[in-house]
Image 1 (cartoon, rainbow, N blue to C red):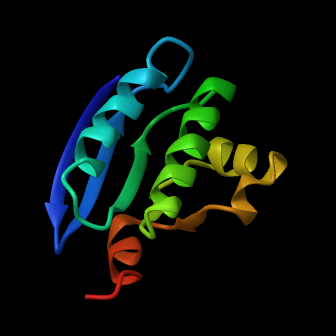
Image 2 (image 1 turned 135 degrees about the vertical axis):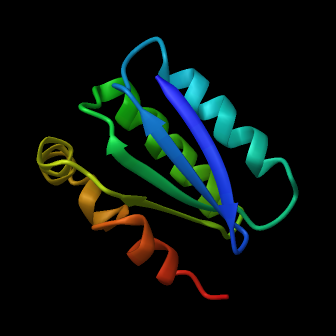
Length: 113
């Protein structure tokens, strides 16, 4: 799994490439935590365009990150989900918790600047 973080208008865009599964989900959590520690209100877009699948460990880390960001009055949203991941979010009811956008542009537009 590769993780690249860019910042646009104070929003961290986290681009992930490869599957998110047991064993690599902690790397993702640590990478996002590094950016949370910068002291500003955390704002994240998780771009899943190049993620073929996520298992339960991956969903768990996203839920933990979401709760942490929310506790700091920040926002974490998702973009570019493939149909399998979108279905997984629906089945697990996480789609009712997470904000999901078609692409990073729509996700970025959802933030107040």
